[in-house]
Amino acid sequence: MTVAMRVMISSEEIQAKVKQLGDKINAHYAQSDKELVLIGLLRGSVIFMADLCRAIEKPHELDFMTVSSYGGGTVSTRDVKILKDLDGEINGKDVLVVEDIIDSGNTLSKVVEMLKTRNPNSIELCTLVSKPSRREIDLEVKFLGFEVEDRFIVGYGLDYDQKYRHLPFIGEIGL
Ligand code: IMP
Ligand code: MG
Image: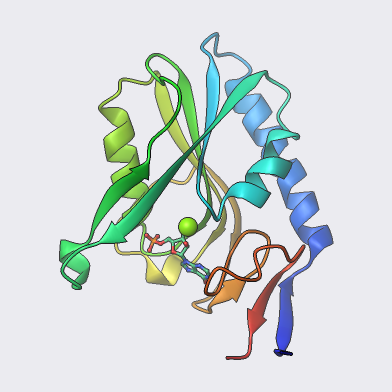
Protein backbone atom coordinates (compact mmCIF):
# COMPACT_ATOMS: atom_id res chain seq x y z
CA MET A 1 0.00 0.00 0.00
CA THR A 2 1.34 3.43 -0.88
CA VAL A 3 0.44 6.43 1.25
CA ALA A 4 1.10 10.07 0.60
CA MET A 5 3.81 11.36 2.92
CA ARG A 6 4.92 14.95 3.37
CA VAL A 7 8.26 15.44 5.10
CA MET A 8 7.84 17.96 7.91
CA ILE A 9 11.23 17.62 9.66
CA SER A 10 14.08 16.08 7.69
CA SER A 11 16.49 13.50 8.99
CA GLU A 12 19.31 16.09 8.81
CA GLU A 13 17.31 18.59 10.88
CA ILE A 14 16.56 15.93 13.46
CA GLN A 15 20.19 14.87 13.74
CA ALA A 16 21.35 18.49 14.16
CA LYS A 17 18.72 19.03 16.86
CA VAL A 18 19.70 15.87 18.71
CA LYS A 19 23.28 17.10 18.81
CA GLN A 20 22.15 20.50 20.19
CA LEU A 21 19.99 18.83 22.82
CA GLY A 22 22.93 16.62 23.78
CA ASP A 23 25.11 19.71 24.25
CA LYS A 24 22.49 21.36 26.48
CA ILE A 25 22.05 18.19 28.52
CA ASN A 26 25.83 17.85 28.91
CA ALA A 27 26.05 21.44 30.18
CA HIS A 28 23.09 21.00 32.51
CA TYR A 29 24.36 17.86 34.25
CA ALA A 30 28.07 18.62 34.19
CA GLN A 31 28.08 20.00 37.75
CA SER A 32 25.95 17.29 39.33
CA ASP A 33 27.75 14.51 41.16
CA LYS A 34 24.59 12.38 41.15
CA GLU A 35 24.05 9.42 38.85
CA LEU A 36 22.13 10.20 35.69
CA VAL A 37 19.42 7.92 34.31
CA LEU A 38 17.53 8.42 31.06
CA ILE A 39 14.01 7.04 31.19
CA GLY A 40 12.40 6.36 27.83
CA LEU A 41 8.68 5.87 27.47
CA LEU A 42 8.04 2.87 25.24
CA ARG A 43 7.64 2.62 22.42
CA GLY A 44 7.73 6.07 20.84
CA SER A 45 10.93 7.29 22.49
CA VAL A 46 13.16 4.42 21.38
CA ILE A 47 14.62 5.90 18.21
CA PHE A 48 15.12 9.34 19.74
CA MET A 49 16.61 7.87 22.92
CA ALA A 50 19.08 5.77 20.91
CA ASP A 51 20.45 8.85 19.16
CA LEU A 52 20.18 11.22 22.15
CA CYS A 53 22.07 8.98 24.57
CA ARG A 54 25.00 8.90 22.14
CA ALA A 55 25.10 12.72 22.24
CA ILE A 56 25.40 12.71 26.07
CA GLU A 57 28.94 12.50 27.38
CA LYS A 58 28.28 11.92 31.05
CA PRO A 59 28.03 8.20 31.85
CA HIS A 60 24.40 7.27 32.41
CA GLU A 61 21.93 4.42 32.65
CA LEU A 62 19.08 3.77 30.25
CA ASP A 63 15.79 2.51 31.59
CA PHE A 64 12.34 2.21 30.08
CA MET A 65 8.74 2.15 31.13
CA THR A 66 5.47 1.59 29.33
CA VAL A 67 2.45 3.57 30.37
CA SER A 68 -0.98 3.62 28.88
CA SER A 69 -3.65 6.23 28.99
CA TYR A 70 -7.05 5.08 30.03
CA GLY A 71 -10.10 6.52 31.69
CA GLY A 72 -13.69 7.43 31.22
CA GLY A 73 -13.20 9.12 27.89
CA THR A 74 -13.31 12.70 28.98
CA VAL A 75 -10.12 14.64 29.21
CA SER A 76 -10.46 15.43 32.90
CA THR A 77 -10.80 11.78 33.92
CA ARG A 78 -7.85 10.55 31.90
CA ASP A 79 -5.31 8.68 33.94
CA VAL A 80 -2.13 6.80 33.25
CA LYS A 81 -1.36 3.22 34.19
CA ILE A 82 2.08 1.57 34.37
CA LEU A 83 2.16 -1.46 32.04
CA LYS A 84 5.90 -2.04 32.36
CA ASP A 85 7.80 -0.47 35.22
CA LEU A 86 11.44 0.59 35.34
CA ASP A 87 13.98 -2.16 35.94
CA GLY A 88 16.17 -0.02 38.20
CA GLU A 89 15.89 2.31 41.18
CA ILE A 90 15.89 6.09 40.70
CA ASN A 91 16.24 7.10 44.35
CA GLY A 92 18.81 9.94 44.63
CA LYS A 93 19.51 10.01 40.89
CA ASP A 94 19.11 12.73 38.28
CA VAL A 95 16.25 11.53 36.09
CA LEU A 96 15.78 12.67 32.51
CA VAL A 97 12.50 11.48 31.03
CA VAL A 98 12.76 11.13 27.26
CA GLU A 99 9.61 11.19 25.14
CA ASP A 100 8.85 11.44 21.44
CA ILE A 101 6.11 14.05 21.64
CA ILE A 102 4.16 16.09 24.16
CA ASP A 103 0.59 16.71 23.14
CA SER A 104 -1.92 17.41 25.95
CA GLY A 105 0.84 16.88 28.54
CA ASN A 106 -1.32 14.36 30.34
CA THR A 107 1.04 11.39 29.96
CA LEU A 108 4.18 13.20 31.03
CA SER A 109 2.59 14.99 33.96
CA LYS A 110 1.32 11.68 35.36
CA VAL A 111 4.68 10.01 34.79
CA VAL A 112 6.47 12.85 36.60
CA GLU A 113 4.02 12.57 39.52
CA MET A 114 4.65 8.83 39.78
CA LEU A 115 8.42 9.17 39.54
CA LYS A 116 8.57 11.95 42.16
CA THR A 117 7.24 9.54 44.79
CA ARG A 118 10.44 7.49 44.31
CA ASN A 119 12.62 10.36 45.56
CA PRO A 120 14.99 11.07 42.68
CA ASN A 121 17.47 13.93 43.13
CA SER A 122 15.89 15.74 40.16
CA ILE A 123 13.49 15.13 37.27
CA GLU A 124 13.64 16.92 33.92
CA LEU A 125 11.82 16.31 30.64
CA CYS A 126 13.21 16.02 27.14
CA THR A 127 10.83 15.69 24.21
CA LEU A 128 11.72 15.80 20.56
CA VAL A 129 8.44 17.40 19.50
CA SER A 130 5.79 19.54 21.18
CA LYS A 131 2.35 20.61 20.00
CA PRO A 132 1.87 23.66 22.22
CA SER A 133 -1.63 24.45 20.94
CA ARG A 134 -2.85 21.10 22.32
CA ARG A 135 -1.53 21.52 25.83
CA GLU A 136 -4.02 20.95 28.65
CA ILE A 137 -1.49 20.71 31.46
CA ASP A 138 1.29 23.21 31.93
CA LEU A 139 4.59 21.39 32.20
CA GLU A 140 8.15 22.60 31.95
CA VAL A 141 10.00 20.75 29.21
CA LYS A 142 13.60 21.74 29.88
CA PHE A 143 14.95 20.14 26.69
CA LEU A 144 12.69 20.54 23.66
CA GLY A 145 13.46 19.80 20.03
CA PHE A 146 10.73 21.15 17.75
CA GLU A 147 7.39 22.88 18.17
CA VAL A 148 4.83 21.88 15.54
CA GLU A 149 1.27 22.78 14.72
CA ASP A 150 -1.63 20.52 15.53
CA ARG A 151 -1.03 17.89 12.82
CA PHE A 152 -0.77 14.15 13.18
CA ILE A 153 2.82 13.19 12.51
CA VAL A 154 4.75 9.94 12.17
CA GLY A 155 8.33 8.74 11.91
CA TYR A 156 11.47 8.76 14.06
CA GLY A 157 9.59 6.72 16.69
CA LEU A 158 6.15 8.24 16.20
CA ASP A 159 3.54 5.80 14.93
CA TYR A 160 0.21 5.59 13.26
CA ASP A 161 -1.37 2.28 14.25
CA GLN A 162 2.09 1.06 15.34
CA LYS A 163 3.58 1.70 11.91
CA TYR A 164 6.01 4.25 10.43
CA ARG A 165 8.20 4.42 13.55
CA HIS A 166 11.22 3.44 11.44
CA LEU A 167 11.18 6.49 9.17
CA PRO A 168 14.35 8.58 9.61
CA PHE A 169 12.33 11.80 9.18
CA ILE A 170 9.11 13.15 10.69
CA GLY A 171 6.26 13.38 8.23
CA GLU A 172 2.59 13.90 7.85
CA ILE A 173 0.61 11.12 6.27
CA GLY A 174 -2.32 11.82 4.02
CA LEU A 175 -5.00 9.73 5.68
P1 IMP B 1 -0.25 13.44 25.68
O1 IMP B 1 -0.49 12.65 26.92
O2 IMP B 1 -1.52 14.01 25.12
O3 IMP B 1 0.82 14.50 25.81
O4 IMP B 1 0.13 12.39 24.59
C1 IMP B 1 1.39 12.07 24.21
C2 IMP B 1 1.36 10.79 23.42
O5 IMP B 1 0.37 10.83 22.36
C3 IMP B 1 2.67 10.59 22.71
O6 IMP B 1 3.56 9.85 23.51
C4 IMP B 1 2.27 9.84 21.45
O7 IMP B 1 2.24 8.45 21.73
C5 IMP B 1 0.87 10.28 21.16
N1 IMP B 1 0.81 11.30 20.09
C6 IMP B 1 0.40 12.59 20.22
N2 IMP B 1 0.45 13.24 19.05
C7 IMP B 1 0.92 12.34 18.15
C8 IMP B 1 1.21 12.43 16.73
O8 IMP B 1 1.06 13.46 16.05
N3 IMP B 1 1.69 11.29 16.14
C9 IMP B 1 1.88 10.15 16.84
N4 IMP B 1 1.62 10.02 18.16
C10 IMP B 1 1.15 11.11 18.81
MG1 MG C 1 4.11 7.85 23.24
